Image 1 (cartoon, rainbow, N blue to C red):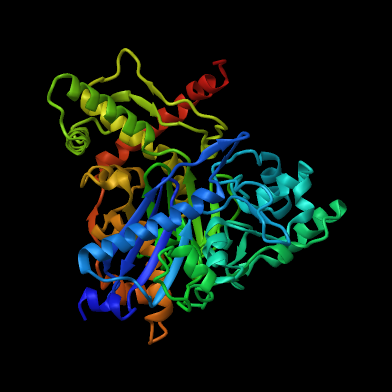
Image 2 (cartoon, one colour):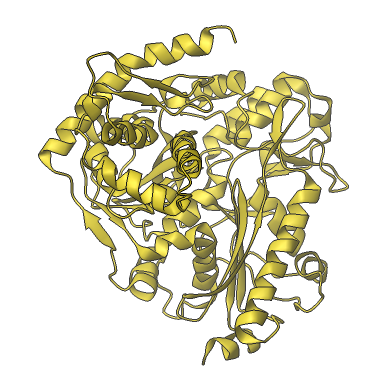
Length: 530
């Protein structure tokens, strides 16, 4: 069948992901190739000191994104989407969405970006003997309890953004295991919430007499390949305001953006990993054994099929780098040349390859916001040099590229050097890798590991959740998720690989030692008065 027939006969699969700056929809065919897409740009808002997205913008974003997809399908194929083989919903993980007995939200959605949960995260980490990050859902819930927020006694259901949208479209209060592992730790053997930690939490909150236990309010956990309900009549109207889309379409479990990134880069199998580098960055290494102890810099989550994953999450990545590139764009416009921004990126990034492997002593801290991995609750973007450093354009750009992955290296050094984690393959995806062979080469030097980049990785998490939806309905041989991705989607394609040289690794190591020493400067800047 051609793409028009696939869509007309309801054989296409839809994936929708809510990222931090864009909602994206990807339609794929029976061979898992993207055939149409739609998008909607949005931004979080700081309301009463907390980062949020309003319910109105969530639904406007979903509906406008779907209408943009419909328009793309109409333009390309001249047909209407009436039925689909399957749908998957994904979104940025963690955060706090709590609802009462009438299914009304109790407080505005609190996103992963909020850091008001320090006390809760600290106490829970000690209680569980497990690193509980500030952004996790359990930290948000417990902080609300500690703060004695009046709404807590009315909670009947708590979920993530993906879980919320899925619930409204299907009526099912469920969550994919990867997203669930960002609510409270998941047991990799039972593939649901860790029973001992749930029991400890329930005992912890007993004195508050809230009238619920954790499993009363948390969604049911599902793994990839399990049915997660179907599109209801109400859900069909919510998703497609034109009224063309039919109810009854099966859904895969809703997942977080970490899980969809793993699927989109074929990094679900144990001893594989991926690095997502854009506005923020994170690495995901799928483990073949548990770590020897908890680390504050390492978050433990799971793949969409429940394997344990060591995650290094960095709040900052390319934002400061982009700001410097925009300065060069302003200069280009000032001179009357008006170069395309893509060309400026390409020239500056490529020229960075001519810089010294240690950046000539220059230092860059890309901390638009705080970085828990390096102990900074707040951030100040900063470029630092001494009079004797080699200050030239190549080193200047190279240090800002290094700076965008510096924190990532510090976190991964724990896994590689202290825990001796074995990694067979790491795949990079995201904006940092758009200029071929630059960000990829620097990341290879930082992690002292070959890095692969695939052309398909640019499709991102919306394609990843579409793959998980396809896995639900297009897996007649009942393969495992890693085997299905390997044979049915990627078919042996590992992308273009770059391995670091000895000199590059030594240079990055020298840079990172200077970077660690210079953190004191960053800390002084944060504590200094405005």
